[in-house]
Image (tube, rainbow over all chains, first blue to last red; front, top):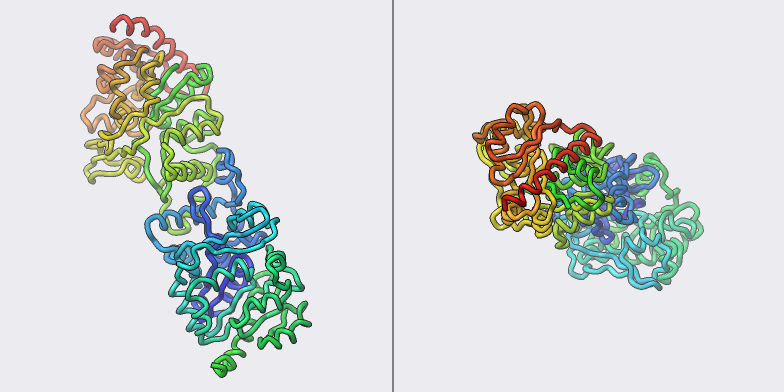
Length: 317
Length: 317
């Protein structure tokens, strides 16, 4: 069993590579839910959906999120009723949100709903929300405190991020299946998702960090920063304004004490010695994932790397 | 001001004709809401929507319900999740249900939501649900008691109707705007909708009948039965199994004491004397509505007919 911790698009690509590299059923993906929000009375879980669509092979190959070839007729009709369509939602995508909202209202936990939906799509991988409790990321900016999707989609990440708050996180409980999977996993892979707002909430969920500390297998992270830039999204700007170094070193420091190995891109080869000085094992390879073959290739390398760390981790315990 | 009482497709056509024949804003349509139901956690108001789409000029011209040219991608995705798509819902149509459900959950009355949605579509006519309270039609059949849409759509009206129950009707309050409009209207037109399950619930809503009795203007009905058959839907079979004559006479008896005039089709000309013996004024004309011009033509004739009854009604009071 392998566990991946994932946010949205980058995490989904990594998860797809791992799913392709592993026997069916051998992967559990623990997904950030702090981006979840309500829109038009529907519960949207952007990262869960991106992971689910990607693992089902129906994700939009250009955007990385949403369903391939989806239409936008519901959203156009919502706009006709006078609502600004600031958050892009496809018609097939609406089906996910509608069914999720219906089941949540009936008292079904998000994790059970996710299992049902992903099962119906034929996904062999277990997708587990980091928690069944509500957690919401808020972004402190010079313009004030913003809801995450307002910052991320509505204002296109144009505000400096001065602080990040996960409301509800103190009273949230990490999903027990996530905790058990992490503890027993042959390896835990932290996907190249935003370390602050995607991996950050997962790690901050009570119980998660302890179970990573107790994990039998090694914990390896794949850097979302390549050559001092983020593969996608505002990770670089966010690291900078929050006072972190915008480099693989900055990311490694965020994961200090948590990971055994770090996977960085060929572009960052020169920084490998500094990472090793931090006590990390380092794999240098091509980390920018293209299509499915490339995702599988990287996943295989990451799994081999993790395998090489297994004995070491056992020895240091 | 003219008031129409309407169910779904037939009522919507009549309302569209009246809207075309009258100055903008001079029509109020009071609509049956006893067919409303919840599906996928969304509130569906079939008759309100059919009237709204028709008056906005965006109704599907073939079905009469739904939005013209609408796609079914949300429903297809819901089916992919394993849900049987027994009730056809278009993608644009979903927008209506999503926004309505969101606003209802926020405590907004259905009437206010209907005003907002129809206003956004540029409809000059006031569309008023018969009540803001929940009323649900149940159909007693040899197979047991069925929810209306289960009988109507799910089982395609294949069961004999042995009884009809409007749950919640005793405690429902007719919408005050409907009551006021009816009382003050120059004429009230009962559209050629199903007298049992479309007009029936409107008339059964507490307050409605009294306000029709108190109406200043004449009340005229357009027969939904033509030549012993229903223009659309199960009205004929329903009249028969409930022990009513399947003819304009059977419909007239259901409206006995309520209407001043009755509009029947040329095909039923022979029954005009019998209707007049019941004390009704009768207009015989082509009542089967085709396109918009035809709807307007019939509406103009109905309004002229109602106008001719105005003095008589005043005289009998």
